Length: 229
Ligand code: IYR
Image 1 (cartoon, rainbow, N blue to C red):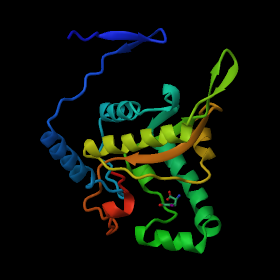
Image 2 (image 1 turned 90 degrees about the vertical axis):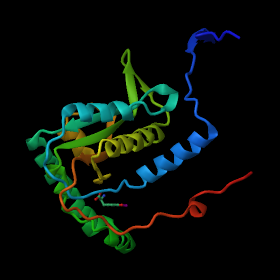
Image 3 (image 1 turned 45 degrees about the horizontal axis):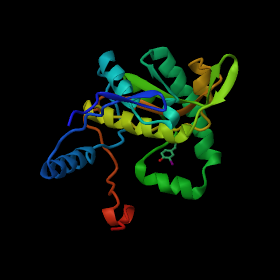
């Protein structure tokens, strides 16, 4: 049987999807190897200032931008910052918010939940890491001076950030998800347009040597999954 390279659906071209042809055994082996590899990822808070080639950052962002998104609007802008002055300004502004958050916005329970992770109001990683990425969600787009809301914006950028984190791990680098709250200072500092809202700040670099991470356990499969067979 000959297979068409492309077909029309609703008048729009659909191209043939080339799937990876693995045997069942290969799929089992690959899924296990992937799990074992991604299970080595950790959020790291201590960074070396060793530089990273810009092309690595570009590839990481291109990988994130392959994420599925609502109506394929790709409602994200990834700002990559290596400029020392900007990183210093971001650190200072983030620490102002964090001091307020830790002192006044967090409940006692929240502070207690964070204690094992060793987080505090100091954010040296924003300056120490050679690159910082700030992911902005694009709430709407302007077309002919009309605002068009994007769809499932939080879901879309959340998935893209997950893929960004995996791409960072794949490159042998480390990151962490920093969520200064509120984050409006980031849009101001980076002069972003009014349709963009800061979503997540991620330092990217090599870990300091030695670097330490909290002694955490991950939930077992039966705590995170329910099978209906
Ligand atoms: N927003 C702060 C505090 C913080 C909150 C949670 I929930 C964490 O899991 C870790 C830190 C920060 O980003 O450091």
